[in-house]
Amino acid sequence: MKIERIVLHHLRMPLRAPFETSFGRSETRDCILLALYSEGLVGYGECVADAAPGYSPETVGTAWHILRDFLAPAILGQEIEGPRAWPARAAAVRGHPMAKAGVELALWDLQGKREGRSLRELLGGTRARVEVGVSVGIQPSPEALVDTVAGYLAQGYGRIKIKIKPGRDVAETQAVRRAFPSIRLQVDANSAYTLENARALLPLDDLDLLLIEQPLADDDLWDHHRLQAQLHTALCLDESIHTRRHARQALEMGACRIINIKPGRVGGLTEAVAIHDLCYAQGVPVWCGGMLETGVGRAANLALASLPGFTLPGDISASDRYYAQDITIERFTLEADSTIATPSGPGLGVTIDEAALARFTQAKLAL
Ligand code: OSB
Ligand code: MG
Image 1 (cartoon, protein in one colour):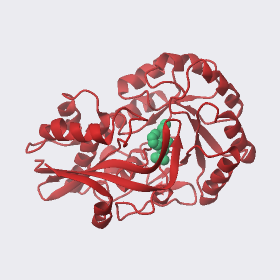
Image 2 (cartoon, rainbow, N blue to C red; image 1 turned 30 degrees about the vertical axis):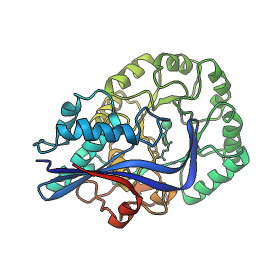
Image 3 (spheres, rainbow, N blue to C red; image 1 turned 180 degrees about the horizontal axis):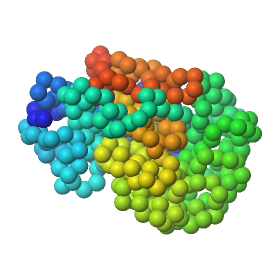
Image 4 (spheres, protein in one colour; image 1 turned 90 degrees about the vertical axis):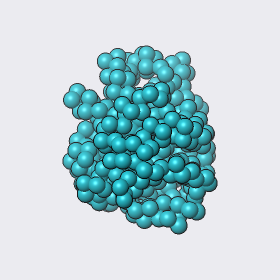
């Protein structure tokens, strides 16, 4: 396919409720929507870099620069066989996985539209519906957290993840476990602890959690190995895993027993599927993480999570958990069994709501 034109949109969308993690609190969510034009079709991709470098070093600003000055010139006006050929071409740029993943996703959407096949089919997904959970931000008190969790359980979410940070961890998790003794529960620290102060987390080991996500630094596989050796509960890595090589080494080292796969963090769906395949072959459970995606990124995550190794529920909540107004016409809704249907239309299977897109666009660049 020949890529004739690329348009970048910097979006800022109001969240329905503020989202607080160990690295900060947001009331809005920024991202870049990419549109790649080829032979009468448009493919869309979402670059999940946030406004601030809290979760990862990338931001909307760095991704805009890398897309405009390096990644777009590597593909604009040129032929490319398809999305699987993109990682090799993008390899001249070191790092910046979220910027790269945005382009790759638009290429997957184009390929699906050309062939009349859904992204799920292209990736080899096997399920028409995927199990999902909800990621609950840090709340003002343990009581407020229990109330918030009760609300999501009432909506039908069958798995709850709560965000923790030092001083806002054990009492909160115990309160939720006491209120709901049998729910599927997990916690996410977003790298807020050191091996020394992670001792405070040892009481979590008695709460029958599915996993403890990324307690220690993003660049620290070894201390995750040391912490895992002190716990019965499985550690799950998010921020530490950027490539299939990291995944292999983390598993060999015993730094985790579960991996959270996010296409943006690993540079795109090709690498995401490779990490899935590696884990699936070893019987290691994976699940699809989330970055508060719009309907575009959400459609992709649903397709990815339909692969057979995604045996734990994903952070892929219904559209209305995040946004009163999304940029896709399609909205993803929760079924009674805590699943969401994977889109079945060609490519991502979503249509852009042009009025909503215009409303949320802060800046636009046509290349
Ligand atoms: O660590 O999984 C994370 C959101 C933004 C950045 C990092 C993370 C998250 C979430 C929310 O936990 C997942 C979602 O519902 O999209
Ligand atoms: Mg996480």
